[in-house]
Length: 117
Image 1 (cartoon, rainbow, N blue to C red):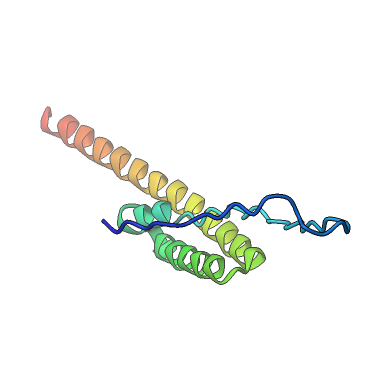
Image 2 (cartoon, one colour):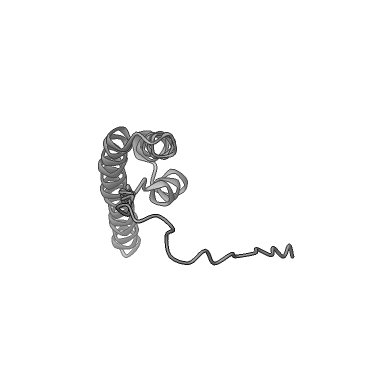
């Protein structure tokens, strides 16, 4: 581990009798822009109807790129689009999975009814 040593010199009170100047530094707090990249990656791998998960992942990466450059407005725009696409991907994915489960149940119960005759 790198160890640094610094020497501090105490200067005391100002020597001149003039007015003391002060400097104010305004530090802007960094706006947190969620890029939804983990959610988009999950949707890309598991819920990807009509490639919505992949498109959401692309917008999430664009949002992260805009955030790294300092373009907060662009990052928010891309993040909003990614969020909307992720919501649609989850909803459509769950509807498809539910429809498949219902079809399997209907087919299996229909096959059981026909076997009993």
